[in-house]
Image (cartoon, rainbow, N blue to C red; front, top):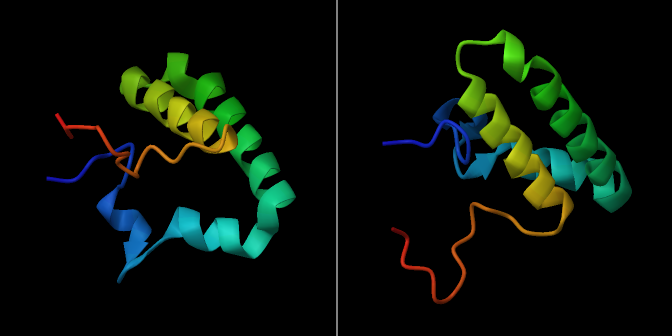
Length: 81
């Protein structure tokens, strides 16, 4: 089963996820600006969509990336549950 927020299947080509390609192409400052824009976008539209919780989760995902924490990476001590 795939996670619609953390790692949507349609964003992956082979072993590379779109977010990783974007980070590489934009560099640190450009990627931070991209993440801020994504947070604004998802919070702006969440009240107008059926899947409100998904958009809020996506905003949280980009906030985490902006803070330097990739939610897709399990840290030591995490049980995965």
